[in-house]
Length: 269
Image (cartoon, rainbow, N blue to C red; front, side, top):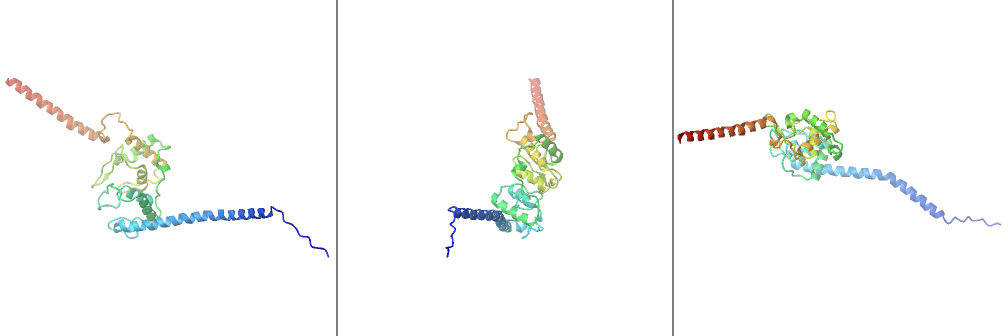
């Protein structure tokens, strides 16, 4: 009776099997990785919303309602978007000290992380403008001349032609734009806070907004020079003419009185 012949495995067979197992495990992990990352992002977003809801209940619900639906003391926040929250809270306008015709900017009481959490919660109530990225409001690729043209056409009627601000009716005013962060200027154009009209992308494109911000930085930046000398705040010909009228005419009257007094004294002597 013949003995059954036994096959001997190749010495590298075990190594090949191990490599195949590792490759299969790596492929399975690559399939699971995007899902794991998406779940992590979703969990982080849910946590931000929960924390923002707590902050909202303490600092905002008394005026805007427990669910952001609004009340007699504050408008509804459903659908205003994260950009409106970042602007209002990031400039200190909200929470407001008291209702009024105009809520001025003041010291910011929330950290940026807390503002982001509030924005996440408000954004969860309804779709609205999102917080812009630095690429959208940064100076790279902007057209300052075009920005000046757009600003004079759409904004100068209220904010003055260099963004110095101005008075409106019934105690309202257009604030001075000097020193305002570019992100907040972009968000103001997006959302139209208080008395300002909104300029969505259908009215002013993202590139147009970038150009306007670049123009404001050019006329109000630290390196901006005034070739005309004393600019009187850049308030325009009315205020500058009034300044010349009051002080110039006052100086002429003073000189005339002095000359008359000297003449009278000379005649007496």
